[in-house]
Length: 127
Image 1 (tube, rainbow, N blue to C red):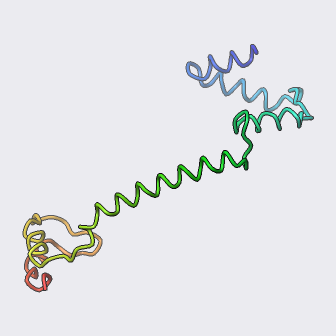
Image 2: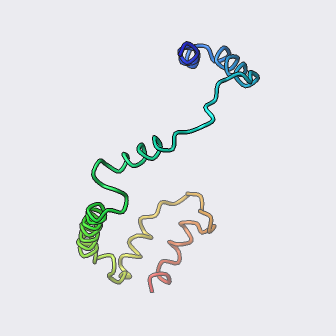
Image 3: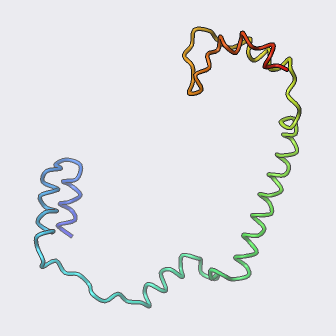
């Protein structure tokens, strides 16, 4: 407990002392290590993570997840119906308008196409 207190106090204020203390533990083989782990205690611990009355594959738990999944799917369907405008055909006017709004004297992207090149060819690109 005292060693943990020292480590906590050194960690923020004195990093060199912190690491010196850690090095002592690395070289010291007399650190007590518990060889046997109480399997029953581990089992109870992890079973308790799922809740008191439910197990990982219980019908109540699965039903809860199914209800959550159905709700999320319904939400996504509603959103996709409201985004139908994304499936409309792009008009020539939209392309020429977007190209005309590009700023000039800017560096090209990875494709090496300058904005000026797009503006000069906008009548061809819009077809």
